[in-house]
Length: 306
Image (tube, rainbow, N blue to C red; front, side, top):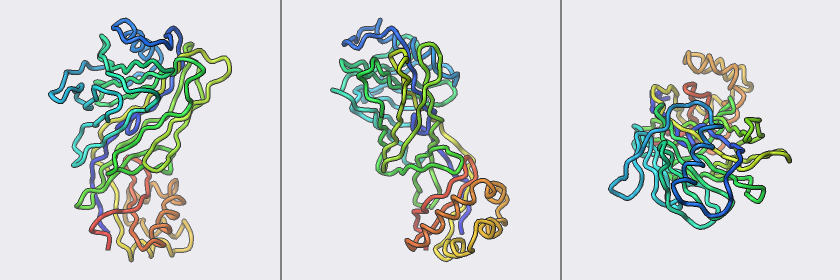
């Protein structure tokens, strides 16, 4: 068993808080001038939760937009790189609905990728250190599912408390992880709109279900940030088999009671942790269990798994 105090990174809408918003006043027709860019930014500002002030970005040497939270692409077909202390930064693909378009910076710092389709995309670097990605659904013809693909080095998982994470293991066995904020949606009047996440391989899908009388456009927004001082433990193959063979969740929690942080969370997360230990053991693998920042059990991919 190896205990770790690792770094956790949050980035989207993926380790990011997610948002779908429904608003009004933006035409689905092509509009890429400063006025339309600012209209989109104003719509987001009117409905988005308070998570920090939007920061201005600078043009990077690679031709994209640079901020303290992320490197944002010049073109919507390229990926967002979330900053932080991770050995391998998280990369996120923007939702693709129609031809790729160039991003433009609104007066408040929001980068808007305005298209001729029924969907626009926007990205914001916040003073809180979070990255927020928004999708704007202009009318009823817009799709209701939006995909954020994480880089091949990362996997996606849902924790026992319902939170979502993108993670990888470094060569030393420590975990690097991004948190994904709770999915939410609002219409132009501020009314709550149903939305949720789904995991499909290395793709996080945000699904929105507006009511028949919802006012368009709709904005979807994941938000993320870097976490540090995470706590978890990786268990060897033998230890994983022992955890899987205790017979019940109560016995499982008693076995890991020597780790106070894990023991405290086991009452809530024990069933999921016990299940994941069994799956890892059946695959002759190892399980990694974390209590901070979320009660999470995942397959431990490390040279220390032996």
